[in-house]
Image (cartoon, rainbow, N blue to C red):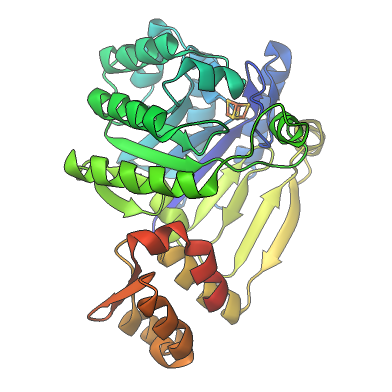
Length: 375
Ligand code: SF4
């Protein structure tokens, strides 16, 4: 399978209260040093010459980079890999983080997909999340993206915020659907220990997120998006026909991907996974001295590969083909997990369609429970 590339840009203009990603505040000198470090790492890649059809700049807030910096990173990637014509090139862009001129410049460098961190269209909720933008910024940046000829835009939306009501969520989704992006990624808020949000909840400043209500929000959103012509193709992702995230599909279908930058993860498409140092300064120390930034490697056993093929594959709503699974791994899931499958079918969490096994919409909400039984 053709590989994808991931480039991590660990800088943001401010820190959101719920975030536990490997990211810090943007400083122009550090960002420039980091770009040089990334280019060094790319030049030393062991996967030179491989064919690539997706590139994903994630973070952090990659849109804080200057277009000239993005251009240098892309030049290093094009120099090292065989990047096919028509590759999907995604840049994560936060509202208010890029001027119209900058968006035009990114587009002219070949970026053809924007992953847009809208999160919610409610100013009070954005403030509670510590986001640096408001709804007006989001609407303006989205209009600027369209003006800059971005014809493939994905919104990130978060449900289950502390104090969020169903009514508020419904207004949010209507607003998102009115803007008609090509893709929607939808997350249930996770409260990570050590974040300001976790501390606010512990001290009673903000209420606990309501998981049951988040489930209702999920179902409601999927219904509305389906009615508006979207396909529900992965547990947390919907798209207009033809607009699946080609890069993210690689993660769920065991395709190879190579990550660059601090905290970036890679997979060779077979039995090897590896990850870079999470800390930006440690990462830079390694690449600047010509060393490897890899901090962790994992050799997968056949059991691991088999389990991953199942629980990653079942994230896709089309499901897993049991016959092909048996041919690849010599395991008949209907036999091996007969009791679990009966239980999940009865509970309406999974369903069979010929040789396909897939999650139902209710099963998608409780997917961790289903996957735990299989693993
Ligand atoms: S913009 Fe994203 S990566 Fe940056 S602090 Fe907020 S949630 Fe984290």
